[in-house]
Image (cartoon, rainbow, N blue to C red; front, side, top):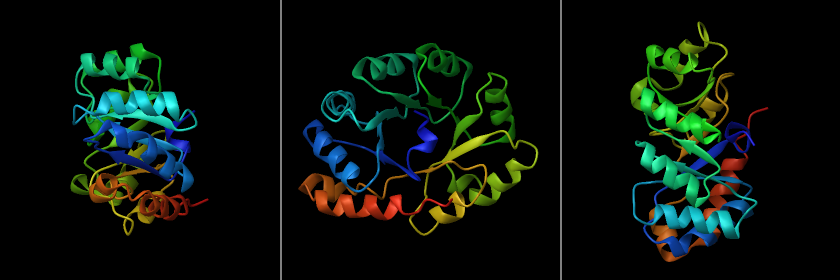
Length: 205
């Protein structure tokens, strides 16, 4: 499965309690979002990925904020099915490629895009999207680099997402608004399903 083609929005999630992972994944699925990126920003991340992979197999679970080969190895062992990094150093690119899994290396400039393209990779994370020029930057990238598709992430909201999704070189966007921390903490899964439903409807054909 190509992570850019599953849903218009990839929920980017920070979890503090691994016991919330499975109901969260089920709530997103109920709203029509079949993909989730669990960021390695907490100790709960790897157990959460493992739980989703084991108990909600229809959810495409990925690991984000991968900044070292050790993290990449741990994410794969936990059951991650795609990988996301905020940047693209040679060491990271080697480690990501060695997994054989789909991955989205982070880029913010033309030179970084070209560095990743030299590896034969044409799908990337544009991060941090809003502070790196937003949709206008991606539109400009599309002129000289039409073969590249992006998942912009960072500062994107329900209001700005459609502008990104309208671009031909954007496959999806990453967003944290689908999984508000308070809703996850209190188990308000209905609210998360509603947010997922609205996000799923953003698809522009």
